[in-house]
Length: 113
Image (cartoon, rainbow, N blue to C red; front, side):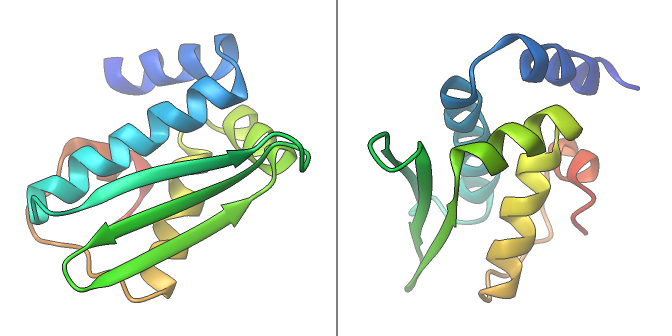
């Protein structure tokens, strides 16, 4: 395990779901901006509705949206430090997001090729 994966596993265990969800959103935005500087990731949380999260990704000419419950976010972060990322990237790909050629090593940890 590389140092990036080790650090991520510590964060997944030590930080709250809310903090971790925001961190994952920032990681995704960093990668997306490598492909197109217009990408923006917004995370909407509805704490009244059992801590549901909605990831809204605006960029190029499309908008992508992924919803998940706080329980699912917690499960994914504890299952594997990149579990939430993998869930989000796969959801975005299913919606038609094209994965660019230039990529951070972060995507390798997520298994996105």
